[in-house]
Each structure stands twice: as C-alpha cells, then as structure tokens.
Amino acid sequence: MHKIQQQILSISAKNDLGKMSLREIGKLIGVINQPQKIKHHLLQLEKKGLLTVNRSSTLISKTRPGGIGSGKLVAVPILGSANCGPATIYAEQNVEGYLRISGKLLSRKRDIFAIRASGYSMNKANINGVNIEDGDYAVVDPAPRTLKNGDYVLAVIDNTATIKRYFKDQENERLILLAESSASYSPIFIHYSEASSFIVNGRIIQVIKKPKPRPWKKILFGL
Image (tube, rainbow, N blue to C red):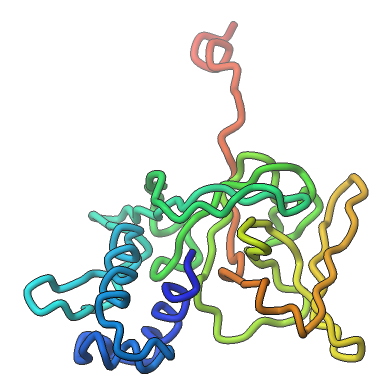
C-alpha cells in the first residue's frame, strides 16, 4: 500500500475526514497544495474497500467496514501476496478479490484487509493459536496505534512485502524482523537511519486458514 494511503487510513481513525477538504486532509499528512494527489489516493483506497468517497463533494466519508458487507457476511479485500521468507514478492496494491466471511469468524470487522501468505517461514508463528502456512490469508489492521515487540507485521522493504515478527532493539538502534519456522531463516536487521526504506503496512491480527483437501467421496458416500 502506498505511504500516502497508509497515512490517510491512520488519520481517519482520529479525524472526521468527511468534514474536511482535500487540502485539509493533505495538510494533516504533509502533502501541501496537492488536492488531486489526495483525491487519487482516496479513490485507490475506495477501490480496496477501505474508504468511501462522496463524489458530489469530493470529500471522504466514513470509513466503511473491512469490505463491502451484506447481512452477516463481511467482504474483506485481498490486496495481493506477501512472502513469509526473504522479502522477494512485490506488494501488490490492487484488490484481487474479496474473502466473504461470517462476522462471527472475525476478531475485527472494520478497517481491515487480507494478504495471501506465500512460503513457510512463519509456520511456527502463534497468532491467537494459529500459524501461517503457504496459501493462508493473514488479516491485517492497517493502522495500529502502536507496535509492541513480538507483534506480527506485514512489512514492505524496498517495494517487497513480507510477513515477520517485529522487534525494536533500542540499545543497538535497529529494527529486527524474525521468521518463525521449522526451517532456518536469517533475521532481517534494519538500522534506524535506514528506516525510510522500511514500512509497516499493518499488524497481523488473525489468520484465515486455506481449505484443506478432503476425501469428499468417503464423507458423502461412506467409501
């Protein structure tokens, strides 16, 4: 997700953007006198199902649920893939589709998106008792108020996405991203001075496991 879109989502948690002009929104995130740039990123967020734009006034309206909900189902936008090993898969920004999930199966229903995991370096992770395997969907809170040591995050490093466990090593002025796997993966170390090339796109709050193949004939017919 683009940095400006991250910033807009972040300020939307504390500000009623529906009462603000594009220039006022831009001023809050340091994008001065560029209303068309703000409008572009608002529309991109709308495509992802994270915000709704009032086209008659070009103002942003309320943040909508995690996706387009109907009844008891929530449609969570899927925003591409993230590698669970070295950061080698590009972080797609376009909505690839939606996960339609019962609200009772989600720990949070608003302001979320999903990312498809690729690889096995997080197969020993423990997110509410669930690990992350290849093909699983990680549910992301894109605007966490704070990050704590040990949080699982979706990070973007040099335009590539990865899922890792986050630690801040203040003594050595560095950030550490760790894999949690049955195999051996090297940690990723980022010095504070190089943090501009590193973005946390959100905290992983839940894992939706991919369906596993079932012997349906045996189940249905007792074979």
